[in-house]
Image (cartoon, rainbow, N blue to C red):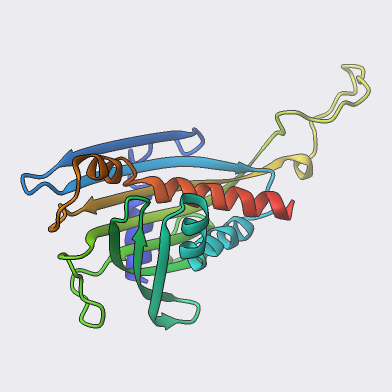
Length: 242
């Protein structure tokens, strides 16, 4: 619960991602003196016309639960995952290994949590929402990192889903009413929009084995690619359920 609270408070802190009603994206990258690539990626996206936060949360969990299959299919990177500490309805620990088209293997060990929350007195959320928190495991005794064979990638992600209603952008045509009897459209006709605010911090360690300059540049260029695949997957699931 603490990780979910921290994720929610980090996303909703004053000034974080600015206006949640506006689509936005930022991407900052830098290289450490050790040659590790660090990336800070923040995005706000909207899913209009959905039924509920729960629907979008379920689509997000579908990606999380099937990440290795979706990454393999969409990117052509052979990806495998070992879930070795799963807590029903709460979270899990996973080791994920993905091999790109240049044959470079990248490994991550993460712990992930997610949940739906209602606004209530004494709770840590200020609104009904869904929260997901993913964080790297620094040392994994069961599946230790193998830097001589695989590139280590650390991942920390905070995601918050919230909902609001707005007037449909393209309302259906209706006979024009005299101004004296014109009324506002009922709230039931308003469109539900679920907003996803996502912040990710990624660190790709400098390989400890020979990698060509071109392959390393491609690896660096694709550091945030999984986030794009996640959004594509969510939209695909939502489109299929409309």
